[in-house]
Length: 114
Ligand SMILES: Nc1ncnc2c1ncn2[C@@H]1O[C@H](COP(=O)(O)OP(=O)(O)OP(=O)(O)O)[C@@H](O)[C@H]1O
Ligand SMILES: [Mg+2]
Figure 1 (cartoon, rainbow, N blue to C red):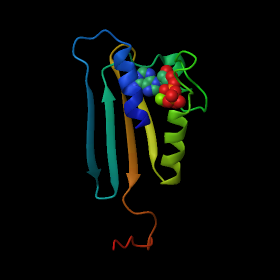
Figure 2: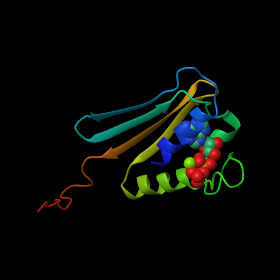
Figure 3: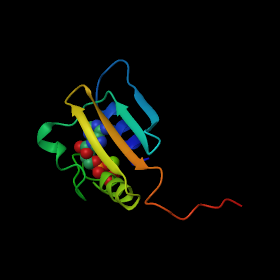
Figure 4: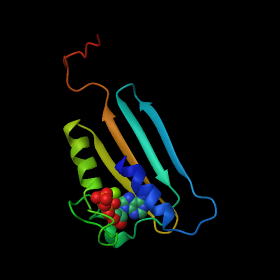
């Protein structure tokens, strides 16, 4: 939700005619789930890219962003033994890649659905 709401903010802030968010999911090597979320919004400037996962880092006006969205995403991915990365071309768009292991360790406890 945080990543999608950032994508929506980036699209609202740009003046492109065709605004789009693409979500792609795949399984790689039967081991890793990959989720790509991309937008063709404003993009992230290079000087800002390395700060976006820091808590309270925001480029949004006071009252609009707390700067916590991506730091929460980062922590959630860490807890699930996953990874989050970003690639972005300023003015062209941004893509977040989330990868999660299908199984954690050998003999991980099965999930029993009732
Ligand atoms: N899809 C995106 N396109 C352009 N910039 C982005 C995108 N996603 C994140 N950013 C940049 O990363 C910064 C940090 O994002 P984050 O979600 O952590 O905080 P926020 O959106 O500013 O505030 P919050 O999510 O707490 O309301 C944003 O302020 C913005 O500059
Ligand atoms: Mg956000």
